[in-house]
Each structure stands twice: as C-alpha cells, then as structure tokens.
Length: 68
Length: 267
Image 1 (cartoon, rainbow over the protein chains, first blue to last red):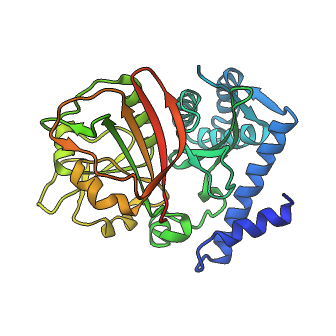
Image 2 (image 1 turned 135 degrees about the horizontal axis):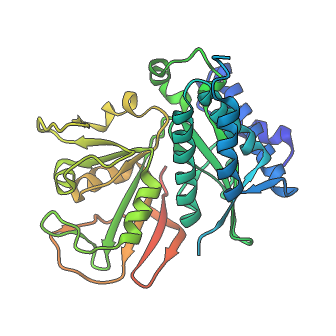
C-alpha cells in the first residue's frame, strides 16, 4: 500500500467531527508506526535484554541536565 | 513458548526520549516508567495477541497495549516468534498545550473506544460462577486477564466486585450498579452512558457478571472468551452470544482451556 493510500484509509476511518489537529496527530503516529515497520523489515532492531541495559545509561546521561 | 522481543530503532528513540525527558528532573521516576514499560512488553511476549489491533495501522499484526500514558505499538511476527516494538507513543508530547481535562472533554476524537470489549471465562456448560465465586483456578488465565486489561478500564457489577473484594492494580475499576454502592478506589456508575468522561483513551472491558454481560454484550464489539474444557456446577451462566458474535481467532489452546476471540457481527 502506498503512503497516499495509507493516509486516505486512516483519515476515512476517523469520526466525522475529527479536527485537523487530531488528524495530524494520528498521521504522525502512523508515520512512527511505519518507521518501526521499516526498521523491522531491514533488521534495524535491538534485543530486549540490551534495551533494558540501555535504559540506565540514558537515565544517567540525562540526570540533572536541567539543573546543570 | 514466549515470543522473543526486539526493539526497532524508532521505538528505541522514543524510549530514550521518554526516559531522558523524565530523568532530567527525576531519575527514579524515569526508572519506574521504564520498568513499567518493560513489564508490559514482557506480558506481550507471553500473550502476543493480548493487545488490540492498532486502529491507526488497521493491520492484524500491528497491535498495541497501554502503559499509561504511553501506547506500546508492536508487530507480531509469528514465523520468527518475535514481537517487534514499533513505537512507544505519548500523544501529549506532540500537543504540549493539552491537559488531561481537555483530553477528557475532547473524548471521541481521542479514541474513546465505544463499543466495549467483553472478557469472560465459561465452562463447557456455560457456567461462569458458583456462589459468587469462580469455580476453577487457572493461573494462566488470570495472567491473560491481567495482560489484556492492565492500563485499561474494567467495568463489572456490584456482586462481581464484591467477589474480588478490592480494585485490581493498574486498572481503573468501575462498578455498574443502581444501588448507592461505594468503595475506596472504585467509581460507581448507574449507566454506561456515564463512562465517556472517565475513560479517556483507554479500552473499556466488561468483566461480568451474568446480568451485566446480558445487558452489555450487544454493545461490545469484541468478546474475549476463555472456554474452560470441563463441565462444572454453578448458578451463574454466560448468556447466549453465538447468534450475535463470530469467532475470529483462537488465541491460545491449552489442555485446560482455550482463549477465543469473537467479533460482534452487528458492530
């Protein structure tokens, strides 16, 4: 399915009263989902066990950044 | 067998942003959020189809499970027995000016999921309860119930709630009752019409008992039914639903029970 078809289908399924802002939010989410699907297809993935370890490094890196 | 979990680059970026953003002011809170997300992901690995189909993607293999305020969106890859986490989404990150009260007021556009989803367990002879108790003990089915309903809203009748005795963790418990019932941590409503402002973007699960199922099944788009493979005696029976619902998926089959997913033909 082309990107255009994806967008048309997504918008078609939304309630009639959906605002422009909500449509854009949904399309942004759809974009993220498609990026994830592309990553999966091309093997751009990390094992869960490694992600659990990464979390602590991200937290350490960001801790106190505001205060600094 | 549990599915293997992998995180896509997209979802890694999401998680790093979430953890980093929170850790700037509260590293412990960031750890807690991370742990909660990991816990939810681990549950998916046991029950890959516990999540509902992601409405934005409209694909059977792309599903989501809530870890409030986030939506964990994942792909089920049956051939390689893998769950690929596609994105971890927090709507408010794109709309920093919305506060929770505004989200509630704006209800439908944020996906208040009506109709509802029913979740039940019944024996071969349709029994769901006996003397206000569940007449079997199936830990794997409890795990399934927890995996599906966590982070969401569960609605039940007063007697069903009293048989449980307390609100279930990580879920909002709502008791549907015409009496003046009250219990700490529980919201009581007299009609399902009162639900909309309470549920925001969470899925509402109807959890029984028999009378509540009877009243609400026509409003339920789906039914998750655990069919316990034995006959038991009991005084509460699951209402007839077969005319209205069609089987769309057998989620799990064990020697003791099957988990089946039905769709309401009329909704």
